[in-house]
Length: 330
Image (cartoon, rainbow, N blue to C red):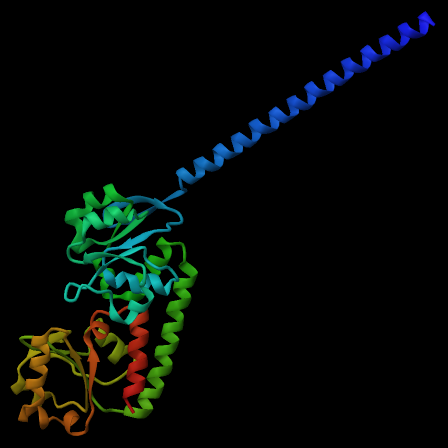
């Protein structure tokens, strides 16, 4: 009996020791797991706080920008059209100097975008408050505030020459935001649309002459076939015959008395939004010289919106212009 007790007592002691060792080992494993999780969490937090950056060239040199910007501020309202075409809604954008609004033809797609004042003089306080992670600025207008902009967020000063060709600007912005393929596809789609429209308009209008005019508060402007903005769309991409202005000028100012010398078959007439420009248009319409022009007599004067036909020379705007031309030229 005594021997049996000693054996059982030793056995129980052994079991207790084994159990305690097991608890220690399990606790140790749990602690190791917690350290790993904390390390992973720290790494993830670090990635959130330090976004991946990449280097892009602008007119000032190399600039470090976020690889995937989420809150882009555009300081030329014209850029907003391009961004929307790339499927990116600007976080903040400047507005028109005239009416302090976003471009009307894309206004319905700009809901919630933070306004930053006129493109010519952005509101830096509003920009700072918007907390963008990338600023797209227009070098010719914004170089004087470049240092201030860079203190707010990484800033790209875009070449003014790109303003003259939205097709190249679209490709450049596609490169900046990592949407090169989409930008090229959008451009290809536009060129295909323009080519198809040219064939249709050639059947409708043949050799008839078209002029793009703009009624401004104090003058009339005529755009010729060498104009690189609206003239390029109307006369080059759509193939409609136009006027070759003296010395290869893109645009020239004319007087009411000079209108009969032009005498086109069709007039696309841009009307400025100012009340003085509207009064000027009323004066024009009541003139005997105006009434004797071929396009007027044939009821082929088309009033078009200046905000689209002058300021909307961009992917979405140009597409809408083509649609309008197809709709009104029968």
